[in-house]
Length: 374
Length: 150
Image (cartoon, rainbow over all chains, first blue to last red; front, side, top):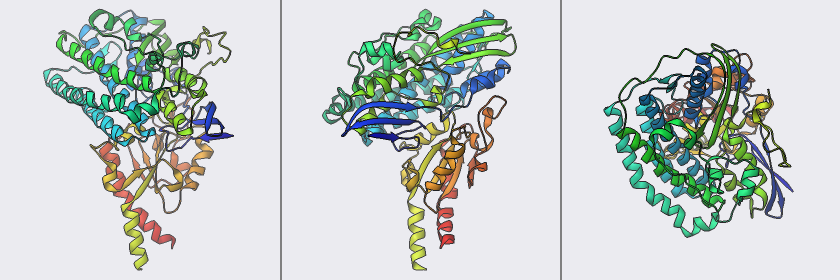
C-alpha cells in the first residue's frame, strides 16, 4: 500500500509530498515529490546586477537566509580579488553563528513536535527566542537580515550591542544542559529514537549527506574548516557521531550549539578595530565558493561581467540531505509516525531544495558535477 | 437566536489555523512557528495550529503562488469548512515580492485564486503583527460569516 503524506500535512512545515510504501505498518520504501515551491530564482538573477541579486539570494531560504548572502558576497569578493576587512569578518562570524544556533534549535523543536513531545518542543522554542532577540539587536531584523554587502557588512556594532548579546547567550547556556539532558537521557524519548532511521557512513557518502546529517553518520566534514576567517582567527571542534540514527542527528545539532556560542564569545573578545567595509571594484570573471550553512555546504558558482550576473548556480545542502533521507533513512522504519519523525530529523528545508539537481541511483557517477547543468 | 449566541461564543474562542505555504522563502512560516513559543503563546487566545485544511477556520497563506499551486490552492480552499477566512501573510501573496519578475515562475497575487480577507505586509512580518492581525480579523469575521450562512 502506498500512503501519501503532504503537501499540506500536520507533520510538515513546508509543502512536499512523501509517498511511503507500507507493508502492514512497516515503512519499506519512500519517495519524495518536489516542486511545490520552485520559483526560478537563478533565472531571475541572470541579467540582473549583483546588488539586486544579493537581495534575491537572501530569499532563497528563510531559515538560513544569512549564509546565502555571505556566500554570495564572498564569491563576488573572490572574483574581484578583495577581502573584507577583519572587523567585518568577525561581525560575519557572529551573525553566522547566531543564525546557526537558531536554525538548529528550530530544527530540533520541529523534530520534537513530530515526536509529540510537547515539553521539549516548547523549551527549545523558548530558548530560540533569546537568539532571535540577539539577531534582531545586531542586524535590525529577525529573519531576512540584509546584513552582508559585497566588501563587508552594512552596519557597525559596538559594546552596546555586544553586552546584551552576551547576556542572552548566558541565558541560553544556562538552560541548555537541562534540555539536552531531557532528550539524551530521558528513557522514553531515547528509546523512541535510538536505531530509528539508520544511515551508515557508506550510505551517507553515497547519498552525499552534508552538514550535521552527514556528521551524525561519521563523515567528518565541516566547510568552516576550509573558510579563511575560521582558519585564521578561530578555534573550534567538529562534532562527529557514528550511530547515524535520529538520536545521533538530534544530538549532533544540540552539541554544535555550545561550539557556536564559544565562537561568538571568541569573536566578541578579540574584535579588531577598523573599517567594516572596503570599496570593491567588481571585475568580470568566474568563481566558486563554499560556505557552511546550518544544514551543510552551500556552494555558489557565479559568472559575471563586472556588473550583471551572466550565470549563477547554487547548491544547497537540503537537496542531498532530503534525497539521502528518502533513499536510506526511510528504508526499514517500524511505523508511519517514526517515518515522519525520521524525515523531520533530516532537517529538511524545501525552499532551499528547489534547485536544479542531478540524482543518480546507481552510485557510479557520484563525482558528477552539480554545476554542469546550464 | 440562543443557538446563534452559543455558536458565536464557540467560534470566537476556538480558532483552528492551517498554514498553506504556496511557494515562499519559508521566512513567514518560521515566524508562524515562532508564534507557538511561550513568548507569544498563540494558544492563550484560543488559536490552534493544526495544519489540516479540513478542520481549519483560518487559512494562513504564505508565498507567491507557484506553478503547482495554481490549481491546488483552490482545492485546499474548498476543503476547509464554512465559515472560513483567509489571511495572506507577507509580501509574496499580495504582490509576488521579488519573485514576480522576468524569469520567475510565480502567479501572484493569491487573490486571483481565492478570496483574501486580510493581508499582513512585511518580509517577513513580525510575529506580533501576525498575531494582532489574526485577532483583529479572526473571531468577529468568523462569527459573522457563520450567521450569514444560516
